[in-house]
Amino acid sequence: SADLKLLEEATISVCKSLVEKNPRTGNLGSLIKVFLSRTKELKISAECQNHLFIWQAHNALFIICCLLKVFISRMSEDELQLHFSYEEKA
Image (tube, rainbow, N blue to C red; front, side, top):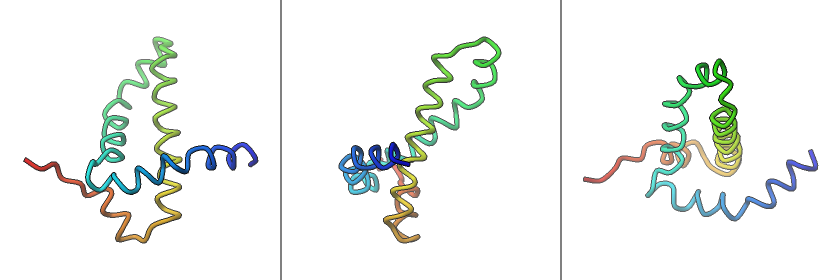
């Protein structure tokens, strides 16, 4: 609990910046898409004991969870939807 509070305090400026810029950049959606595309490799990595890949996947999931917690606690449902409906401009 205390560690979580310290983490939130240390990352609040990064989270606020992402909240502001993400509707234009789509970074959160990209991170989630990359994580989901790589999950198929997790089973193989575990069987091969590729600890580096597992560690990277764990960290990506941890970052996604932390960001979603901030997004959900600070936004309305409509605002939150903007962060997942990014479309790249041609």
